Amino acid sequence: MSKKVRKAVFPAAGLGTRFLPATKAQPKEMLPIVDKPIIQYGVEEAMAAGCDQIVMITGRGKQAIEDHFDVSYELESMLAERKKTDLLEIVRHISDMIHVAYVRQKEALGLGHAVLTARELVGDEPFAVLLADDVIDAEVPCLKQLIQVYEKTQCSVIAVQQIDGPSISSYGVLKAKPVEGSNGKLFEIEDLVEKPKAEQAPSNLAIIGRYILTPTIFEELEKTQTGAGGELQLTDGMRRLLKREKIYGYVFDGKRHDAGDKLGFLKATVEFALKRPDLREPFLRYLKQLGL
Ligand code: G1P
Image 1 (cartoon, rainbow, N blue to C red):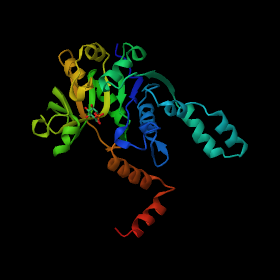
Image 2 (cartoon, helix red, strand yellow):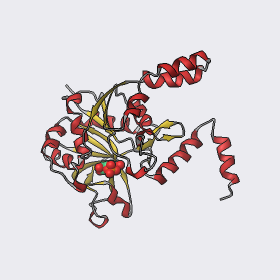
Image 3 (cartoon, helix red, strand yellow):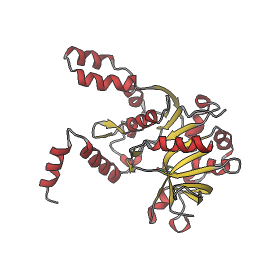
Image 4 (cartoon, rainbow, N blue to C red):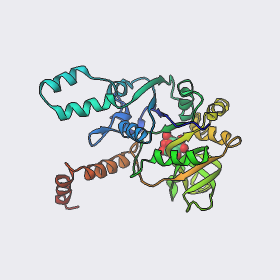
């Protein structure tokens, strides 16, 4: 019998060097887009896709993430006393949201190593991996789109986006053939390469930080050697997995923001602010009067 995707793994032990000095003493996952930390966007997406357990891979200096998803008694009683019921609801919603388990990645040895750290908590079932840096705005949550593909194929499936030009070298890249009848959205993967030189990229299909993986990936990650950047790469683990099982790439519907990059973060902030009913009008007025 096929198993449901219930668990969502969030690798969150990275050092966030791209955002220094903001990330010197706080996790990059806690940087807010408008008023919500980027990690919460990912957790809400996982829940909307039907996951009911979060596995957060953290490391030193990541306490704020645990506190964020925990109950804050002092804050709640202060808000209750002052009758700030709407704020109280927002704050309670975060801790009521979902069960979160934490596991420490003692050293930042790469994304593949982070995923391997979750092995015991995930067990023998298919699971999701979400990279919080990739904030995806979509009518149907991106992870839900992938789960729908998984349910049909019973194979690992990863989110992909077409990236043209030299920035392809910042991604894992697919060599893949389109699946007939999928309107160019579903690809059967033939090979994957992590951060190739632009001229050596096998296609313009880049891996975006949403994955559904079968538990076989753990066996393969254990045997995977360090790769690009001296790290144990998830892409290399999937490359081994490919010898045992099919893997699909899915060109999802939606807009992805690279919130781990300064410009990407600014763009996401502007776009999410413009979608907020309470901010849209005054923010638009402000932007217009800048006369750019
Ligand atoms: C990671 C993955 C890469 C993927 C990217 C998507 O890289 O290793 O394959 O394309 O996420 O955001 P990172 O951006 O963490 O270096």
